[in-house]
Length: 150
Image (spheres, rainbow, N blue to C red):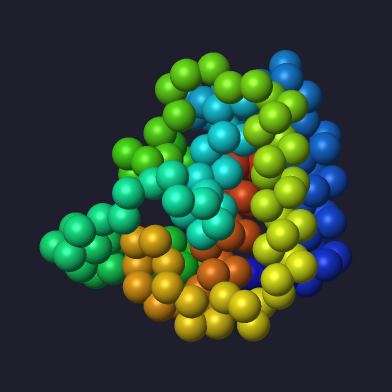
């Protein structure tokens, strides 16, 4: 798994994002490019913003037990997989705003560095190691950028 905390990899992801434009079409799935960018912002909103309610005890337990292993491992996501309700983006978004927000979140994550994330509590999965944060961030972005051919 590539390391999103490595400046070179962050810049490669940003370069891929910059290859998108508002008319880029998906190769699979239902999201438009603006929705995909908004969708990719959600994990960063969960880390840096207080806009998503945290799951309660039982739900968080179930997420840790059944979802976390898939999200933090190094195995790529399958096409057309199910997503959590907080990640569903069904309305039209402003492409440029969502793109800028995602690039800014990536830069902030890079600036904070992997040690900032070591042992940090995630929104849904409890404390994660820096490699789990990396896997979660990197493979989600890689999956959706690949969905749009970049």
